[in-house]
Length: 463
Ligand SMILES: [Zn+2]
Image (cartoon, rainbow, N blue to C red; front, top):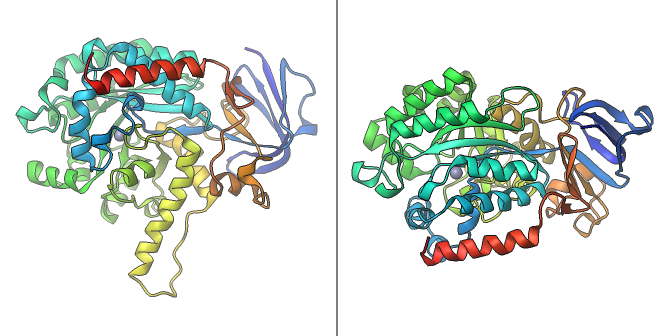
């Protein structure tokens, strides 16, 4: 560890409580933590490493709150291109069932490489299928080599087709083994301290792939250790119908009955929630991982994010698995969040009188969700903004790029409104992960070759 000095940023966006944007700003980071934030002249002159970011915009690192890294192996599978969630899953389960530990390792590196090149410094992943000896450890090992913070979810599926669930029986696990492995992972890897590079999350997959018993047991195990809980919820109308038919409850009410409510719980999606359910989230402290691209790709719908923000709910962004987004670009997802919220506003507006004004999501709101919002969802007060005492996690983009030409009247908004550019620097805990637009921690060409080989093998049908 040592010191890192950032100087002369065109603009430094702090996302602090006053939302300061500092022209000519900089940071002084010591041992991974921010010691000073301000204009360059007020910062120390020397450090172990100095980055002069003249012409760059600097922002807090983006935080991804929902992903399935392994799905980078099954992007654009022809049979899963033009179907909704349940058919998409049924097409892909058998392919995912062929994965090996090495596939988990390689796909984790691919997803994290893409994320880091889009400004992401902390990623949550939801791994819920463990075929052929795969373990969450394979993912944790791969992530530690890249240097991005990881919230690794020990996912699970236990309700196979023969018991009324959606996945085939051969991809589900025994419940006592799931709980035993969950406990092992927490004890082995979970770091609750500020500045943690790795935390463990317990994450049964969805109401249609696990039993109520596993949901309850996972919740009590998570609370015994103080780790967070995560699952998919209210993603599609099919799921709502399934819950009403099987349990006589809407998805949010079902979660409440299973003790899945509180500040330690966050749900992916929540497209199909009404105003009472939004109030329930606000009252209980549940967070949301908003995944607009995935929701569009699978024709799921558009989550009522402006209503959620209005109710004071914690909202973060997620690229979701790469088989339902086909990309892991978090800056692009920020733009998608803004655009999707505006489509929804337009649709609501169309049914009301034309002179009413509907609030439109702003670029700064979208960036706030992607930074502070994600930190709140993951329960990380040490992340999400550039302030003294917080983690030294940020990204920087050179504004003199084709994408932003003509849009520099407001550089902060330009990086959301304009087509997303690859970032020039990504720094995690004061360590440079991306420099001059290139990953410092791995060989991307070699990785792409290995990844494509694995993807071909899986989709063509051999182990
Ligand atoms: Zn998902």
